[in-house]
Length: 118
Image (cartoon, rainbow, N blue to C red; front, side):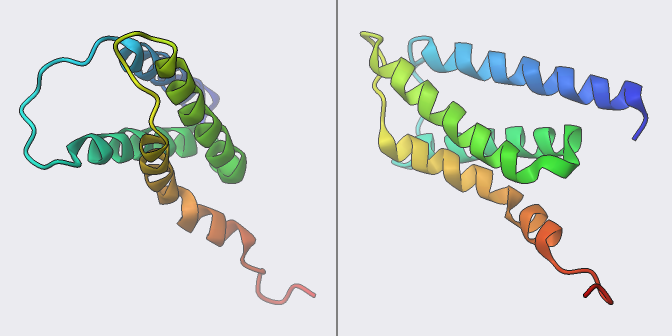
């Protein structure tokens, strides 16, 4: 991948991390809720997007990226617990982990033995 493209992807990933963290600490807007677990779907979707963006930026570091995103999700939940208007929820973190699971195929592919390798 050209260096300039990798740099753009990495900057986009960093900007997305900052934006998600800031949005996670703002008061919750009143939204139409279609299903009772819509919040969990949103968490999984956001973390799947972050995972794919991070994987595009650092394709050789899927495992580290997964661990870092799980820690990032936990940090968000801890930070939310310190606000008076948000609440840290371990189920939200589990939904984050479901989103990070999109990295599993990349992790499995990296661990496959190469043909002919002894």
